[in-house]
Length: 107
Image (cartoon, rainbow, N blue to C red; front, top):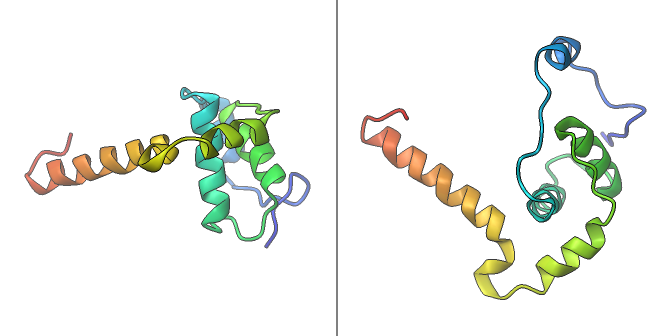
């Protein structure tokens, strides 16, 4: 299924959530671009066009990116493992949480 703003499925809780919580992206624009490109490349949203993903995810997180290609170019110009700095950070943080949980700590 290809999602677009016009035919995106509605969640029965979406109106309630919108009234209760406004999600705001607290990371950098570069981190947002890195995340959206990774989700797109992984096929996490099927064959949804990249531009639509930026629009839809941007709306969800209150983050408007108008220069995603330029920011992605900057990511592409990074060296080695640091090319995916934000994704590496996410992986490390989740791994640490799982390790803490394995040791009996849930925080």
